[in-house]
Length: 254
Length: 321
Image 1 (cartoon, one colour):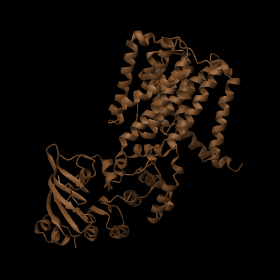
Image 2 (cartoon, chains in turn orange, cyan):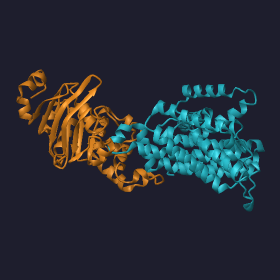
Image 3 (cartoon, one colour):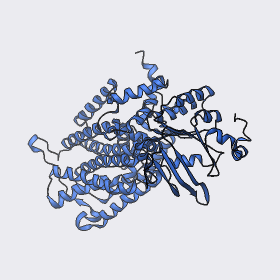
Image 4 (tube, helix red, strand yellow):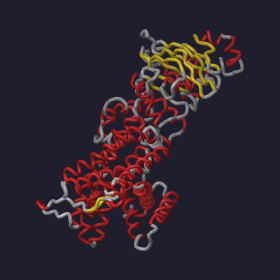
């Protein structure tokens, strides 16, 4: 197999759950630094695609390359170490732990701290100062000692994103990051993502079309597990099939 | 330890435990030794159950393995106590059993893990029960002699001296386990308990962290098995039995999973009640079941947390003083 320079190459990816075909022959490429939005009606296979890309479920067939490496059979943690980070559509946090502990767990994932059986977690000053920097940056430092389950839903959604972004993974899979955020919060999220340097490649699923089209440089439209359209936002908006199936009946689209 | 009140109260508890044999009749000093042995066992199970979220009804596998290794070495090989070798072999063999078992079982979780560990432990029970030539079959191995420290004036045949011997190991184990659960490694165990999928996507090899926790837990359970073999002076297949595992699990839940101190308190309550009840009836299991139901209904968070909550509630009353 020849080496790929793309951040992500998906070739002919299919996933069947018994008789149900969740994804069927999906192929696309993402250049480094690109922002790709994946849209499609409910049940189109967007989250299934993310589950496969992050290594949580294995595809029925097809191949995935990230940064030139065939990662099709890699476990989730190996993909993360390679540079793939993801957020979850349904908030997936360490609920009984504090905000600070959640961030520290994101920090400890690389390095050898996770294997140190005797050194107290509180003694890792460098991890703590990193965590403090991140929490201050996101305005959550005051909330650091609160267990995550006691946070508001909006704050939990925010932490969901912070946890992933704090790891500096170069390929980010964001699964409905603005779901549950207020319009103001969503707006500030969009500007944060837009300000991200180009060494981050971002794949985004979002139901909010304003968010989607403000961030995306390319759009992939899934419909019943198949690629309906793939191109620039203008091309996709102009695609008659997409308008008919997805945008036409959607009064949110601009 | 960050909190001075916490360290002070622990120092008081340690001093209290050290002074108890001076006032207790020797029967209760013996019972206290047993409580400390099972406290180590329950705390080791808490590393899995309370901190990592891995329930086990087969934790007796590690206790039993270590106890039998001590028994065989003591009775069959050395025909007397060679403490250093027996301690290390016992603990090491428990770790080896965990390392082998962990390769197979740690892919399952929750109730499936609970059951597969129970089955594994009962398989070892079956081996001990049937292997008459080496393990003595259902008679077990009687005649295990206790270590000999006469040089430093410790005669472990004495109940009081044996108690201090156990107390020493209890304190060392408690400190080590405290360090483990508060270490950066222990921190990742909490993460696994809360969300495995999140840990995976953050980049953790969740299986490996669990595997290490499993072996560490088995090492301390093995230590409790070594001490138990000396305490009883014999080993029998019941060391491997489901009942031993279940008692350990109930100690953890009754005391409070994920608190480390709680399971030690749970061990004390269970063994005291067991000792008291067995004076009246042989049907200890019925009482054990009742305790379990009572705990789950009225103190699902465990006695230790309940105690802390009550303390919090009463604080305004005594604070002005």
